[in-house]
Image (tube, rainbow, N blue to C red; front, side, top):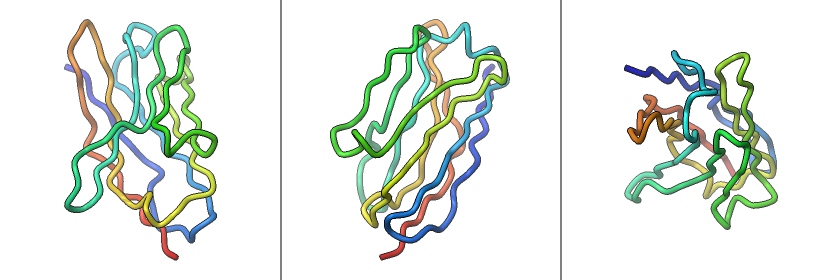
Length: 115
């Protein structure tokens, strides 16, 4: 069983930045991919960013140029640097990891962007 623990959420003003962290209980080097989704109140969960074991990244269109996903294999941690935050970025952000075709999810961390 893989456990994922997110941290770094909080309240920030529009235009500000936050960095989310996701620490995995297993080596992320052996994962196929890790990433972030988010879910705003009353909306479906949506993809934010993904990073593969090879380091390739994918972003949702609305996050391109503002968000950066990265990984530190030595720390078993994936990061999401979020810049130029907007009120519409307010959501619970969930980390996930894919190991051998199975997805594991963290509990989520709240990000609130005030206008």
